[in-house]
Length: 105
Image: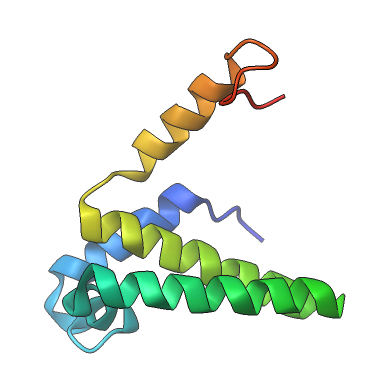
């Protein structure tokens, strides 16, 4: 199976925002409801993900992790923050000195 990246997901979400054929899509509906709704959906999805982790059901964990990443990228879109900015921040954190609050070991 070809690799599907978060960047590919962000591009797909971006296209759905602007194309007419996607007016009834889940993505468009989420975006139209705004940040408060999407934020609530993110929290609900995070809770579901935690429950999946506790279940030890790998398929369920993967499904809920995918849902969480999808909603995360939609939230960034609502705020107009490109995924590349988040990835750049993560890269910067790998360069932080050990013991720094932002460091990623």
